[in-house]
Length: 265
Image (cartoon, rainbow, N blue to C red):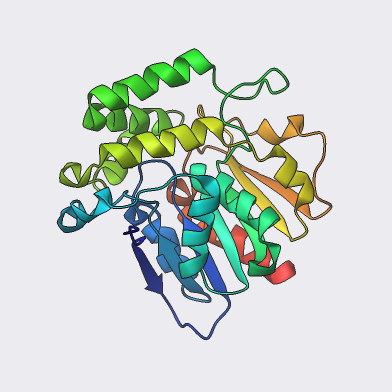
């Protein structure tokens, strides 16, 4: 039996649709303020990644069929995404969305990523990623203590934010330790380490916007400067005084930026 992804819908289903995917270990509630804001003018479907949930009642079910193979995950996401929708992903969610936008272009009207890297870990021809040893050390921390590892991750996410303590509190409140699933956390980390969508960025045939926080310590706002090829419809926006989650740090500005980009495309 395959695990069914959890998702939540906002707004009028007759309007243009936006499909949203959160980052590693963060349940859909972390992006709900943006989903609610965008639902004023759009129909928004906000999904959880496999096994990442705020709902402790479903934690037993998440042991069934968790699959972080990118092609299998693509099919699961396409099952719940509205046809011809804008795909909006944060961090790992953005990398996944870029893969789908390039590979299954008939289902994706446009792509928006937030604080996302096409390749999170360094390679011989890619210096903008995290060192393998640092990534593996963090993965071991998560394996030893998922709750401690996630708190460490939230601390890194909020470093550089104008109000880091308030932001940490907001993100921690989205997480339910009783719903932690080690298989899901480790599976998503493996995907984050191995997924490389630099080629997919060059294949994008849809409008694509990439939003970054200038003070982000996890994903540099200049990460895409190392791409040798970009789509002609490729745009970048950098938000000052923001870290890894500008959609929470400057919600209204993020909403306006996304809406203006969609309306202009």
